[in-house]
Length: 267
Picture 1 (cartoon, rainbow, N blue to C red):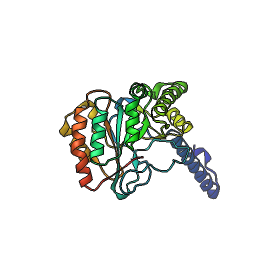
Picture 2: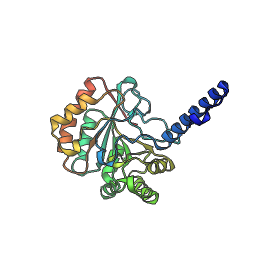
Picture 3: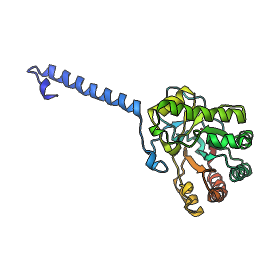
Picture 4: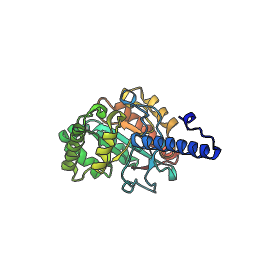
């Protein structure tokens, strides 16, 4: 294309080249903003490195939620503000009548506030557990109605997955969630738009010890301790299966992270 633009006047040539390059750069920037990065597709959602998208403010003592996000947002949150060695702990796929109470006891013991990403059908089945989580001062995020992979769903199905879950959380706790986590890290423009319409901040993660695969307590602990840094969002689970390894690992890592000077915040 640039070859066709060659003119006998050198000044004209320079102007045309600059305009062409500038136009390509502008188009690339617009495309990137529309789609955002997809660091993990549905097949590799539990793991991988994410771009350092940050939001939120750190503080002292118990976690304080960040100020309302500025819309529109075009990608999920992978890190929180790292001031004061702030980190965030997120607990997914519950609530579970077996493991959620155990996690709540540990969090209370170490005065740690976390975010629980809850599946709607479990909230509907165990509303008293969702209420207990909220009353303990933790945040609750929408995690779809059936833990659905949203990547291939049409917009109306995405809306139903999110809206039914928010209604269930509201019925159980009296408050609507302002955070959303996509199962499998399956973020699409449709999902982001639905979050925007429902005024929910999309939240991903930056540390995944794969506790859902039950790799052993030692592995979960070492993975969290090795990969956590200021601003990290840690992914753990209290639902979706046997989470005894997760509970045992949390009993070890929570005091270690506190001793290392980390402060637990919520997105």
